[in-house]
Figure (tube, rainbow, N blue to C red):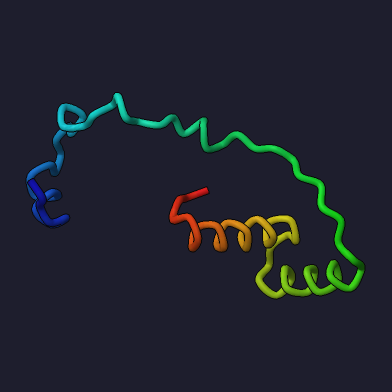
Length: 81
């Protein structure tokens, strides 16, 4: 049965919804927090450009790379990283 988000809020306002959830299909948040290090070599001009772009939006270059890779993969594979 499909319901709107407004109807869901109306029904479950101040109620525990755990009886309606299937925990057997739940994925632990810890599974998504595991990370691995990947070493990549870039040319100096590319590093310079990367640093400039990162500075424009106020993030570290490493985080900018993670954002770009995540965006690219999400568009292609439609899953969250």
